[in-house]
Image (cartoon, rainbow, N blue to C red; front, side, top):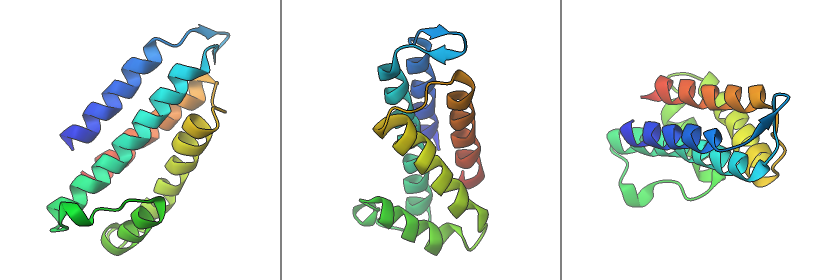
Length: 124
């Protein structure tokens, strides 16, 4: 999971450049970038897990639906909670944080990144 953790550390570094006032990020661009990078860390961890389980790198998922299917097929057998955790990370980091730029509360962003790290640890 070294590559996934590298992405996660990059996300944390990006957040350091975001100005904060009253526990709120005042520049959303670096927050969006950090959330997108943290979400990529989650995807990288799944990719690495799948390759280690014999999935050909050419057959790795190319969409959110593909990731959902692979999680159901390869990961949910071991832990059904991982599907729910992935969905929460997808909604928080990718949709709210990156795509919509809705996350500006410092504690919420840090909690989402912490959850990404926990997810990576569970499948690593």
